[in-house]
Amino acid sequence: MTASAPGPADLREECAAGISRYGYFDEQEWLRHAFLAVPREQFVPRRVWLPKAGEDGRYPVLDRDDQPEQWLRAVYRPLTALITQIADGAVRTEDGPTSNSDFTSSISCPAVAVQMLHHLHPQPEDRVLEIGTGTGYSTALLGERVGADRVVTVEIQQALAERAAERLGALGYRPRVVCADGEQGWETGAPYDRLLSTVGVREIPPAWLRQVTPGGLIITPLATPMHCDALAWLRPDGQGGGGGGLIDTVYFMKTLSQRPRKPWRELGWPRWPDWSLTVTSEGSQRLRTRDR
Ligand SMILES: C[S@@+](CC[C@H](N)C(=O)[O-])C[C@H]1O[C@@H](n2cnc3c(N)ncnc32)[C@H](O)[C@@H]1O
Image (cartoon, rainbow, N blue to C red; front, top):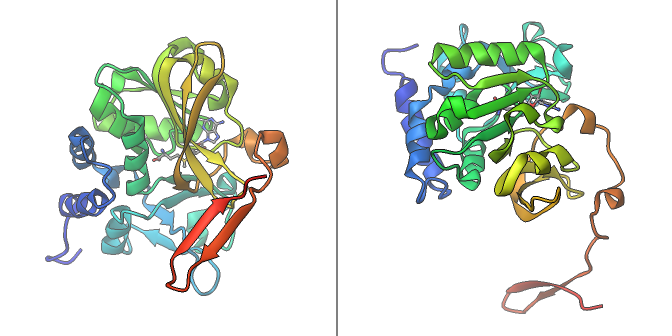
């Protein structure tokens, strides 16, 4: 690294300033503190793929040892997720760039990790269930708010769960890291006040609604027919159901058993709504759903 290159703490500050523009730290100062307290670079493997393919159609590999400055800058780019696994490990970073886009694990981009926690709005005494531990980065951010001993995080891949637990432990965070199918939640630790899924679903797993306390909050990416996921919120009603809404557009990999697609109509999506579009001669544009 060159003498003048900014270090991790400088880049973390710069990244926090970038995220501030989205308003996710507004009225949640704890979140800014948490973001500044967690050394994100310690959760990123030495070699990762960038999520944007180059002109050759392949995802480039960044190696911390060969390109330390570029690697560190990528770690702290607000809107860049870094891909840590492709095709469940069948493709290896050692083999260089790849055109395979079957991403199966990543460290979520800083802005989205913060956005999810902003909407989760955990309180200091909350018990939190996280689904999709990945690198453990979001787990550490949660630990900064509620105390890591009040966090259970579930990862379906044993090797990833073990590596995340090591990274977290090295930094003094001791959440319960469970290797299991997160679609089943984790009954032993229930009830939870909050559930954060950092892996997408097409259908909300019923166990989540049972294990989160009535009036608690679930935040999860939900697949939509619009070629993106929606960040969804849901409050369990204590009867196994719940109500909520969609907050923003996000993009996430899907839980292992929900990778295969189901017809949207079976997942409760309405037919494509009938929108009318009017543009005035002054250029003002208005979209409305038509009355039927
Ligand atoms: C986007 S990554 C999580 C990112 C993580 N929050 C981070 O910042 O490092 C999604 C993770 O969910 C895991 N996953 C997929 N299906 C799962 C399931 N059914 N239960 C638990 N984890 C699952 C994947 O192995 C992957 O590591």
